[in-house]
Length: 221
Ligand code: AP5
Ligand code: MG
Picture 1 (cartoon, rainbow, N blue to C red):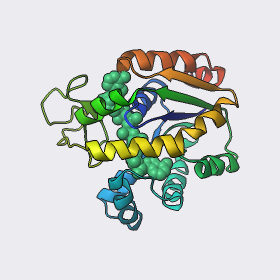
Picture 2 (tube, rainbow, N blue to C red):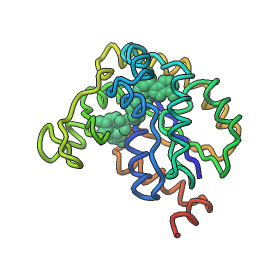
Picture 3 (cartoon, rainbow, N blue to C red):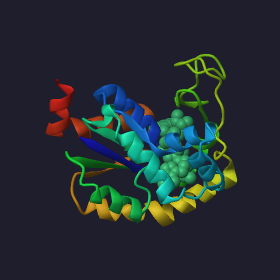
């Protein structure tokens, strides 16, 4: 089962992907996390990506596809995965289709208002070591500034500044939102209201996925 999470910045893709990883054992494949890892490690691809990410635009398709191909080729992706942040434009969706990957593909579109996005992202903190996601009000770490999972020091993402968030939203509506109609026309597409509390959003996504026979069979193994 391949799950694609569509949604604006801050819609909860990473939060939902982590919940699905934990519930179904499907790896979370986030192009944003892969890019931040490359930036942090100062790899050649990371050096290219850093300036594009800092401005709120998309990283070029060749860079993203190179990172994604490498990640999807790893063993843990054989039985499926949760894609968080990919595809993000028509060319990326075309390349995903062209890959002819096996197994059913189910698309979840998380819908949130721009006001919710701004509030969530200004309060977000992440762990750069293990990519755990926190919110200072709705999901604070047990010890302020310290990751519950690995003990790493929490940071604010470079692109979680108000002017960059607004640019990321503009990019989303121009490049990614048009994909919604494409996937909606195919079936196995579900629109989910992402404005509510995380537990309610996750419950709704799981209710949808639990009705998918292929995933239920995997989880029962
Ligand atoms: P990426 O890392 O994918 O960022 P994004 O799409 O902007 O989404 P976010 O990670 O900001 O939000 P999210 O939806 O994951 O929400 P989260 O769960 O964290 O990409 C970053 C950049 O990399 C892009 O701008 C681009 O430059 C580049 N890039 C990435 N992929 C690319 C691609 N395919 N092609 C080209 N470039 C690419 O939640 C947000 C906050 O809200 C957290 O604090 C969380 O705790 C909280 N929260 C979540 N859900 C709820 C809820 N229901 N109620 C209350 N709080 C909640
Ligand atoms: Mg994310």
